[in-house]
Amino acid sequence: MDLVSDALCRIKNAYRAKHTLTLLPASLVVFRICTVMAARGFVDSVRWLSLRSTGMQDKIVVTFKYSGVRRVSAIKGLKRISKPGARLYLPSRRLPRLLGGLGLVIVSTSSGIMSVSRAKSLGIGGEVVCYVW
Image 1 (tube, rainbow, N blue to C red):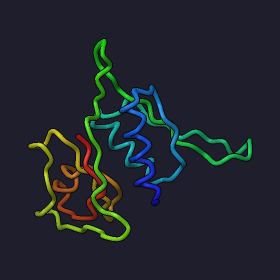
Image 2 (image 1 turned 60 degrees about the horizontal axis):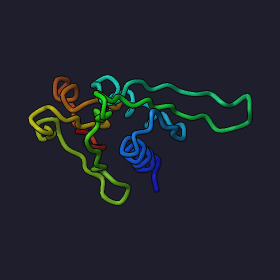
Image 3 (image 1 turned 180 degrees about the horizontal axis):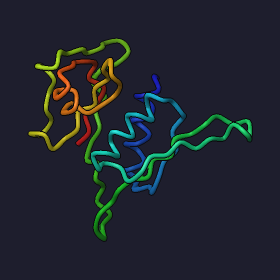
Image 4 (image 1 turned 90 degrees about the horizontal axis):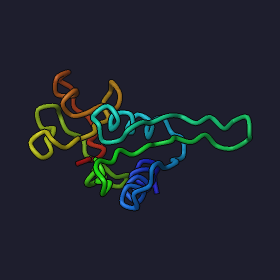
C-alpha cells in the first residue's frame, strides 16, 4: 500500500472510531495533504513529531475536529482518486468540484499540493489525489 492510501485509511478508521488523534508515518506528501485538510477545517491540527533522537521514525500527529455532545466528525468521508496503478491527471479547466464546493478536492501540482480552488485560481492542473467531504 502506498503512503497516501495508508494515511487516508488510518484517518478514516480513526475518525469513525471517534479517536481524538492519530499517528501517521512521516512523509512530506502526507503532511502537506493533512495541512490542506486543516486549512479547510476538516481536521483540527497537524504537526510533525520528530523522533530521530530516540532512533524511531518521525510521525505526523493529526488531531480531529468534532462538534456537539454526540461528537459528530467534521469529516464525513474520504476517497483516494489517483492510485499507483491508475493515475488521474487533469488540466485546470477540467478539475472537479465536490458537493458544489463544500467538499475538498486535493490536487498535486507542479507548485505543490493544494486544494482544487487554489489550483484553478493559479490556472494549473495536476494529479487529483483525493476527495474529502
